[in-house]
Image (tube, rainbow, N blue to C red; front, top):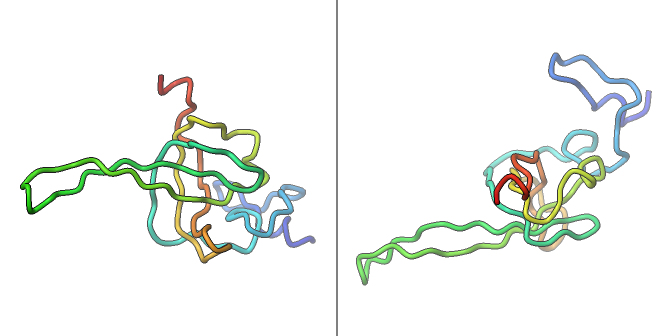
Length: 119
């Protein structure tokens, strides 16, 4: 069997023959293991092999004794098997993995909601 066929499994743990996206950086079909921190954010930019998500968080300022909002942009790898599902404005879940390039340290896990449902 091919490498992509042995890695793909369904929910019961049985192997799926013939399934795969031939992407070595895919967390399902490739050799990348997703581990570490998990974030949810909206897609602000979509590129051929990566996406940019924006997270909004509250930070406490001890000087002013107030909270303020801060935005963070994170670049994540977009596997070929999820290319058609994810679009700009969608709410997605990403998880940390080994560094894939200079700025990409996360991989897309799943799509939570589409951009149309969020509006």
